[in-house]
Length: 321
Image 1 (cartoon, helix red, strand yellow):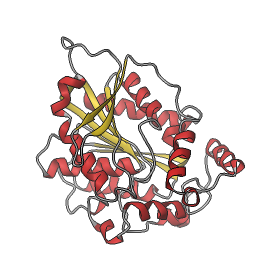
Image 2 (cartoon, rainbow, N blue to C red):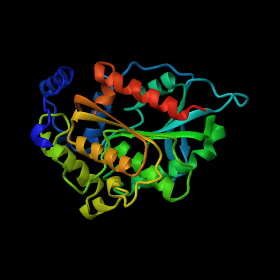
Image 3 (cartoon, rainbow, N blue to C red):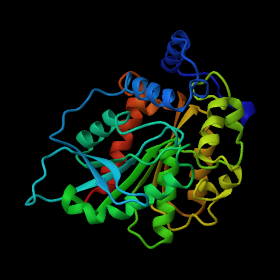
Image 4 (cartoon, helix red, strand yellow):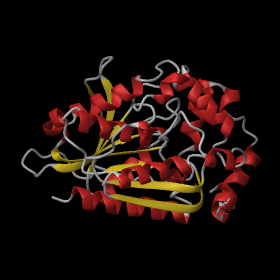
């Protein structure tokens, strides 16, 4: 695969690479966890979609394994106890289980709620290294389990729920879908996985092909893994690496979005293939020349806008009454 792979970034993606290079900023491993978190929150919104105005953007909590978990509710219409409840998406943000926040993904969640006409619940899960694996997994599963009980408070339909996220959030979303199946919980109508990390225990060829010069570099991936799974034996646990689950049958339909110039490209492809072999309906969209993280650049990149628009179409179709 690696010998024939197209490693040329899309011209718009190359422009982003030039901007990053010109900024002269240190890579995340060099700046450290706290500075990396601040930097990510500042830069991830720069090329994102415009900030959609919604009548309801509220911070709430849901019960979690280590106390109340912060979530943010987005609704395209006001909460009305007499109105029909809205379908909803539980969104789990990316950032290598180490960085990322509700604020970093605020614009994306606002846009999804407004464009899809659904509620979005965004989770602020515990981050590594303060809370290594499996803390984020436990938070994601607990949030999914708690959503039906919050249906009246959030004005959402407990029978029309989807789950999704990007990168680390795609990883956690896939794990939640597996856990929901295995534990007899309500299943998502759709699992929306954007360039998900699915196999933390194996170095797939794309990680070597795009090790340097494509935004997410190999050193940063290693740094994220050092924070999240400092004991590398944990990477073989399917809750860290959903590709390693023994059985993918009976999972909900999936839309998987991957970027052509991404170290995680092969992990997304492998997961799409594993689901398909297990009889799960999968729509896998590959965006040639795109970089890891491109879902947050829909304010500037044509392919990113297309990915968001097609993902919203898939959510609307899956959550239709």
